[in-house]
Length: 87
Image 1 (spheres, rainbow, N blue to C red):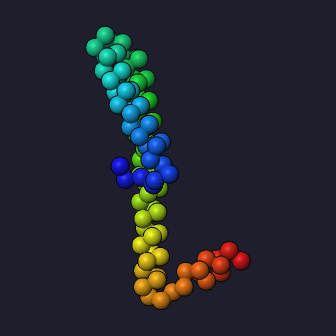
Image 2 (cartoon, rainbow, N blue to C red; image 1 turned 60 degrees about the horizontal axis):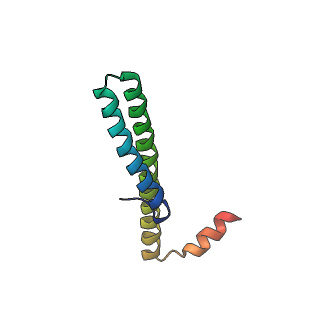
Image 3 (cartoon, rainbow, N blue to C red; image 1 turned 90 degrees about the vertical axis):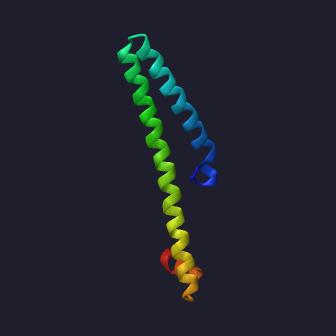
């Protein structure tokens, strides 16, 4: 899963709970409990949105790492840039 290491445990919980939500939604649907099925489907979508946010955070982090590497390759001292930005 493409998430930050610190987010991995949460991402795994979201995936597992999302799978459970889909199973429960299907079960409710089979038993003609359409409102309950919809609630479980909405819960799955919430899990997916949260997981998408974790993936987006990792993508943004990766972009920042690329920028830092590019600046280092061009001889820019990142420590000076960081200090200057915090003043």
